[in-house]
Structure formats: structure tokens, C-alpha cells
Length: 227
Image (cartoon, rainbow, N blue to C red; front, side):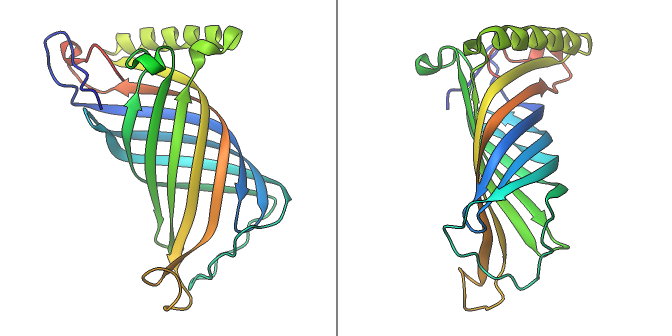
């Protein structure tokens, strides 16, 4: 990961927050369910030369659009989980790390695009399970034609608003792809790995919009590149 620096050569260590919204189509390999999912995510943490690390909260709404058959057999959890209806919702929070963050213009191969890859862990202690997800966000707003122009205009407006509060704001729009699983203690301690198993394995893809907010208090400390 390239170290991003400001004009004075200061390393890009600073607090940073983010807001992301997405609509995805998801397939669960273990249940066969196909869901249309919309979610909103807000996180705050620390940006380093080696990525972003912090905590987050989210809200998610799912609409089941059918079942095309499962490809894998789900594990059996020690704590029974209530089946979801056609429409279901979820809220929660956890910890995340994004070790790969390439912003537009930072690398030759990403002259107009950006890429972020992250790992998210969401515990649900009351229900006896936890969600583990890997997600990739591909920023392609500069390739989106009229929509990209509108996204760039919205980003400029967000930047100007952020400047009024002494904050730097950078936004992106594009495609996302994620793979997530739900981990739980196995009903049979001899099953799974170290007594744990998984009862979902979802592959999701869709589109997203999001903004990063540099939470540094001092304007001169804001880095000249990156988020």
C-alpha cells in the first residue's frame, strides 16, 4: 500500500469516517434464497498507510424474491434461529478493516477508478451467532457518463459542505461485490471447525454510493492525497 502524504510530508495517519448505501442482489448457497437487499452503513476509525480500521453500525432491509435451490448443505446451529419472512430487517454493528484502499489516480492501472477491499465482523451475542463478510467496492463514477457527471457534482457539493466545517470529504460511486457467512456454535460439538459451523453463505453484487470524511480537526493536517 502506497503511503499517502500531504504537502509537508506528514504520513497519512488520521481519524476518518464513512457513509455508504447500497442495493444488492444476493444468492445464498446454503438455502437457495435470492434476496434483494438494501443497506446503509456508517463507520468511524483510523486511516493509516496500511488501510482503514474501525467500528461501524448498519441497517439492512431484505426482500426475498424466490428460491433457486441450494448448492451446499448448511450447518446446524446449537441456538435455533427464527426463519425470516418474505421481508426482513436487521441492524447491528461490529469492527472492520480495509487493508486495500486505492483511490482514483493513485495507481496507473486505476487512473480513473478506485478499489477498496474490506473485512467486516458483526457479532450477535444475544442470538448466538456472528457474521463475517469480505467486500470489494469499485469506484467507477468517472466512467458512468451522465450519471458520473451527476455523481461528481454531488461530490463537489459534499466537499464544499465539508470545508465549511473544516473537514475533507471524498465520495465514490460504482459496483460492489461481497461474500458473507453466518457462523454459530454447532449443535454437534464434533461438527464444523473447532465446534463452530456456518448456516449461510451469501454472494451479493450491486451498486453503491458513499463518502469518506476526514475527521482531523486541523485543516493543515489533512493529507493531499487519498481519502
